[in-house]
Image 1 (cartoon, rainbow, N blue to C red):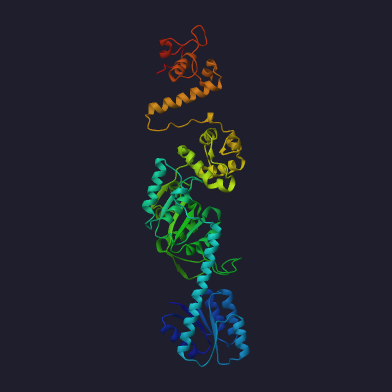
Image 2 (image 1 turned 30 degrees about the horizontal axis):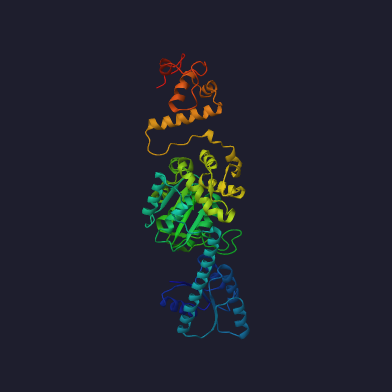
Length: 489
C-alpha cells in the first residue's frame, strides 16, 4: 500500500481524488493548501503527490519544488483547469512526473498513479543499488572460507564446529576475542554458510563512530535531519536486508543507541533519524567485541536484555599466544597469500626465523603476524625468509626469552621436566659451558646443577680431579650441598 498526498483547495476535487486512491487500496492524505501539503510531506513523507496548480498562497509549482527537495524519488503530478503549454513545460522542467488537465476520468488517474508508483519503485531500487555498491566498495569484501581461518588446535576446531552448527540458522551470534584474532573472518564464514549467503554482508565498526554518527550509520537519516544531511541516507540495517549485519565492537555502543538496537532485534523495525516512517527489515545480526561484556552488564554500562538478545550463540576466538603451534601454519598461509604480489621468489621461512615468530607474544594477534610476514617478504632475499628479513621487534625478541611448549600427549611430570631441561640448556649456553656461572644464573647450588646436567645429558662432565667439574656424591645429589638447598628429586 502506497501513501498518496493530494493537495487541492477545491473540496469536491480533493475528496474525489482521495476516493479514487482509496479504491485502489492505497492510503490517501489530503491537504487544502500548498503550505499544508508541504508540511505533511516534511512530517510523514509520501510515495506519490497530486497537487493543484493554482492555489492561494503556495501554488503547485512551489509544492513541486518542495517535494523535489524533501524526497527526489517521489513523483509529483500537477492537475489544473487552466493549463497552458508554457505552464506544462515549466512543470516538467521542475521535475513533474506528469501534467493533467481538468476535467479527467478516474481511470486516467488510476493509470497515472500506477505508472508513478512504478517509477517510485525504480528510483528507490536504484538508490538502494547505489548505496549497496558504495558499501561494498568501502568494505572491499571478499568471500571467505575456513581456508582463510587457519588453525588446528582444539580451540580453533571448536570455533569451526560452532560455525558449521549455527550458520544455517538465524540465531544471533556473539563473537568474543582480542583485537586482531579474526572475529570478522568468523562472522563472514557464518554468513557464507548461511541461507543468506546470496544477500549482503554489511559491517559497522561501532567503536569508530560518535553516538550521533553511529545512529545515522545504523538506521539512516532523512534529508534535513541534522546539519549536513543534504539527502536521504539508507542505514546499514536497510542495506543488510535479507543478509547479515556484523556489529563490530558492540561493547562501545552508547546507552541511547542500545535502546534502539534492542527494538530492532525484538521487532525488526525502526525509524530513520529525522523520519516518522517505520522501516521493516529482515536481518541476521552477528556482533563482536574484545570487552568482557558480562562485566560491562554488571557495571551497568550495557543493557542486560540487549546482551542476551545478542548472546544467543557465543563463539570465543583464542588469542595467538594461546595457540603457538598454529604460527607455522599461519606463516605459511600468509606467505602463500601475500608472496605472489610482494615477493614471488619466497617459498617459505627458515627454522631460525620461525623460532623468533614462536618466541614472540603477539599482542596484535593474527593481524600483527600477517603484517610482520608482509614486511619480511619485502626484505627477504632468496627462497626463504630468514632472521635478517624479520621486522626489528622480532630480531630483538630472541627465542632464549621464551620456552617452546612441549608437543604431543605428555603427562604433567613430563611437561615440567621438558621445560626444566630447556631452562638449564639455555643457562648453560649463556654461561659458555662454565658450570659455576650456569648455577649462578639458575640460582641453584653447583652440586645440584651437576645432577641435572647429567640427567638431561647437557654438556660434558669434567674429570673428578677438577674441583669445579667434580660430580656430586650420591648424598650431595639427593640432599643438596648447603643450608637451604632443597633435595633434588
